[in-house]
Image 1 (tube, rainbow, N blue to C red):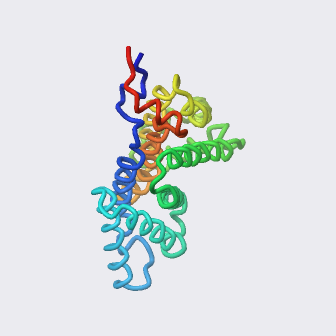
Image 2 (cartoon, one colour):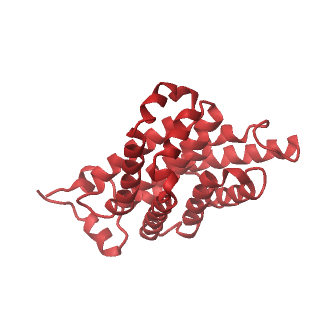
Image 3 (cartoon, rainbow, N blue to C red):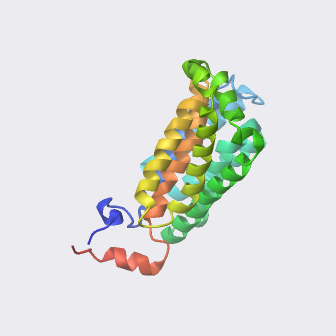
Length: 250
């Protein structure tokens, strides 16, 4: 009987072919964050050179050309950005950095790549849950603060002033806790992916402040995790790889 892995048509070394292209899309999506007036660059020349290298790296990853070079370039560029003008962008950039490190060290080993990306995604959700285990978040205060601070969410300010904010806080906590677990099991991975995609789309809509810069930043942070769900449809053991090479029969 064909299961979700077969029906989705993935799980056959797609981490080596598709995933880097998705990462390249994230690199290009982040480009508005690099605009001259948004970050403090040493000079116009440094900004132009860095942006050119960034765009080139993203295009190479998307096209699949010179993949190894592009993966190394992404690791170096992201590191330079974190240590330089993008220090305050550590959340999204750190995710890209760790993804690039995994890409570099597992270039020809798709099963190991899948396993490391799984661990990375799980670690992000575990950390997210732990940081939310504080009285302010559990009481809905942080939810109310975010809503009241965003102009495009003004219609919802009155709603979250009620106990609704507490419910939203606990639902978010529960969803992230489940994402750390449910993605690992074949029976639950598909509905968990749907849950995760819905959660991250909601976070993009809520967390951004309406500017293209912020949409790009928040988008990369959230879509980076959604793109990484692909690893949970990829075998992480050679035995599983051999099984997937054999066509399933109903």
